[in-house]
Image 1 (cartoon, rainbow, N blue to C red):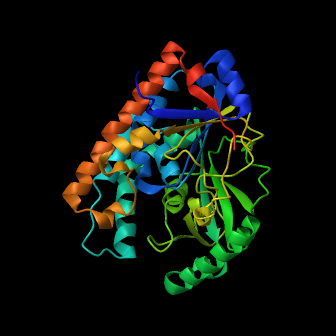
Image 2 (cartoon, rainbow, N blue to C red):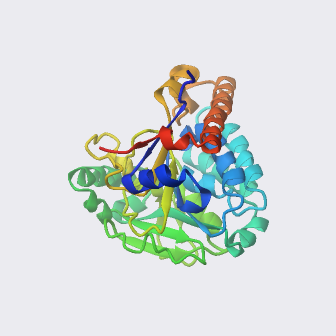
Length: 356
C-alpha cells in the first residue's frame, strides 16, 4: 500500500463538489498562498504542476490571494513562462547568502536584488495587461509606533501582540490591511472584509514591485517600504502580520478556493501562532480545499521538518543549501501524487471533510 504523502481536506461545499465532479481547474476561482518564508519550498513541485499543466487551459480569470511568501510565489503567474519563473524564484531563494552577521540594511538589499532578478521591470506591464491571473497581494500599512524602525517598532509590535491576543479586531489599531490588486479585478471576494480596516489599491507599473517587496518585508528583519505609489502615504510591511495563513470571509468567492499549504493547520495572523484556539477550519471556509504534506512526508525530510528562516542561523551555508534543495526535490513527490489522484479520479476518495 502506497503512503499518502499529501493530505487533502475540504469544506462541505468543496467536498460535495469534488465527490460529484472530481477536481477540475475551471471549478477553482481563487488560489491562496500563505506567509511562511522558506516553508514554501516543499510546495514548489505543486506550484510547477498547478502553474503549468493544471491551469494551462482554464477559460476564465483566476484570482490569486497571497501574503508574504505566498504573494512572491504567485508573482510567477502572469509572466511569459510561469513555470520557469517559479523555478527561478526557487533557485534564487534557496541560494541566498549573507555576511556572518547581516543587518537589516543588508537583508533588505538582498531582497531587492532577488526581486529585480525574479520580476524584471520589463515583465510588469505584461503581467498587468494579461487577464488570465489576477494578483491580490496583502500588505499592511503601519500605524503609530509600528511605523518606526528599531526599538520603537518593537515596542509597537509588543503592544499590537497584546491587544490582538485579547481581541483580534484590535490589531486594526496598529495595522491596516491593504489589498493591492490586478487592475482588472473587481475584488468581489474581498470587498466585504470588515474584520480589520481594509483598503484596496490597484496595481500599476509604478507600484507592483514595491507592493511585492512590502508584502514580504518582515518586521525587524527588513526595512518597511515607504510611500508606495498610488497608495495612502505611510510605511508598509509584511502582509502576514494581519493575514499569516488567513481567516477572512470567502463566502463571496464564485467557485472553489484551492489552498496548497505547508501545514495542516491554518493560523489567522502572525501574532496568533501561540494562540492554539485561533485556527481557521472548513466550517468557516466551506468552499476551500486545503492541501498539505502528511506527517509521514514531513518525517521523511532531512531533520524531520520543513525548512524555515531559523535555518539561516542554525546551519552552515553548504548544509543549508543541500537541505533546502533536497526539500524542494522531495516536494515534487507531492505534485506527482496529486497529478495521479486527479488523473485516476482517486481524488474523490482522498479528499476528507474538513471539520474542526
